Length: 89
Image (cartoon, rainbow, N blue to C red):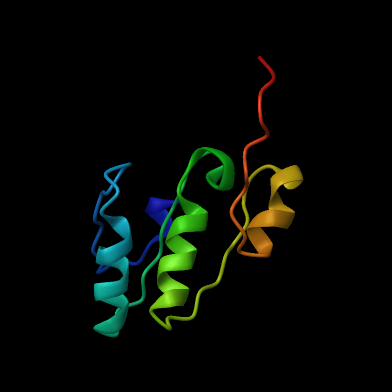
């Protein structure tokens, strides 16, 4: 996916540092187009729900583009975070 980005696009690796929310809000408020690529099932294993919520709370429009597991796609499209099922003891 990164190979398809514009040549002048700035790439900022954030991994799982937890600092992606304020960074995305800051860049979007500066008029930058922000794209967050997540590998795997982002709503279950990643931070997609928290990132979407942070951007929406800041009044920044968000689009979620699905690319992975169809069974998880419905919740990603609604911009609602997954709530992990409780494990029995």
